[in-house]
Length: 292
Ligand code: FE
Image (tube, rainbow, N blue to C red; front, side, top):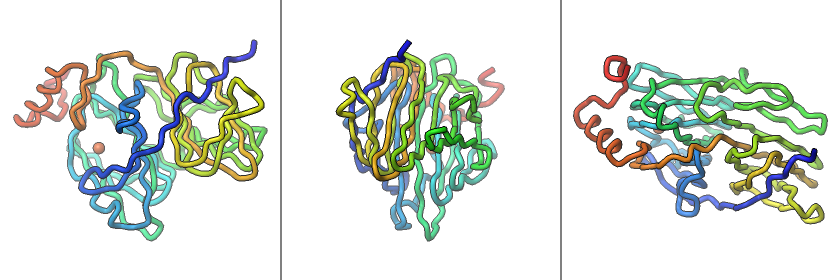
């Protein structure tokens, strides 16, 4: 049976924002035009060759109740947290951090002649896992499998499955798909996504034509745009004379109440007040004694 096509439902133009100690970002989820896209809470694209746009970075700050996913294309971000983890996220690496019950960390982009470019996604945690033990999945570029389809698309599989190849990110609450898709000129690509999952694409190079219910007029979208896909089972896209590159991201929605306060995302106002109290009293960071 023919799988039901997912059409482009909404096209979002990113909003420029300044975050951290003064980092310029382009925000497509978590801004004015798209507050959230269950289970995704935020999606930022950062990229600049000018050190003053990014070098102030994100000094020590808390998170609770979410996962933050950093995927680098160019440059390097140094990372350090209050659990004693340190490291660096370089080109092609992904860091999938489960903040869970509480973490404080800093994320400092390093000044490089080639600049700094990448993405940060926030994924909500289900109520049952908001206070879970913090966890890191630091995955180096070499550990991310790349699939070349018979039609010639090159796909880095960070999470999810392409032609039987499984991405290395595992064990998070919402069974995510996170693909970095490179389409040469005149290349088609179809990906199957479970019905009921929330799905979006973010085009950051070139122009992509998305199949819709009118085969003669596909929806052509040029970079940089985020597009929300409607429900269905597959997304089908192609390029014309130019290559293109996009992220394809999907996950199971949670359908739970969201109460946000900066870097805390909980289900109730009381839980946010608790987070602020924990921060004041020095009991914010997750510990085995308090949470098991
Ligand atoms: Fe952070």
